[in-house]
Length: 219
Image 1 (cartoon, one colour):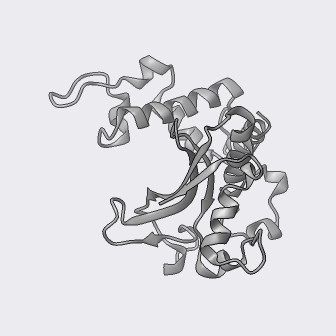
Image 2 (image 1 turned 90 degrees about the horizontal axis):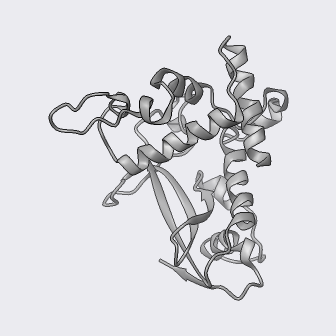
């Protein structure tokens, strides 16, 4: 709840600065619900198809506007100005972190799940990829993704990679860590001094469950 409030403040900072109507807690929840609905509906082509009001002969109309009470324009507007860092907290030191715009989202995600979900006795650690087709910082675009992982043969070969932990029974992802550039990964905390990179990563992924007796399964 605290993180959602922070996201509301940060997003409204951007909306107001752009002379747009501020959002509300309930509207932000609705926006998030539509993201989930998009995932459940699957790939329907261009985003506009989620708001299509008539079947096109191939796909059934999703008609999100009528179903969820939010126009595509409003959804796009909130997405454009979405932020996890209030304007008052952005300074030179903040921008030193190449992932500063999404770091609070990761921290909020990791802090939230232990409060609302009691996992089974089995935890699974693995990795996931978010498809990325945009610009890359390493190729000189200052607005590009700070680090893009490329692994030939993977279902999603180019993207933003996360190391993650999920409950082995319900499958809900409960902890994530962004895979960053090699130098940044070497600087991440080692909970056991002298441990290998793989061991250090695994321990960070399950640190919220130290002392619980859970069984950790790795891919």
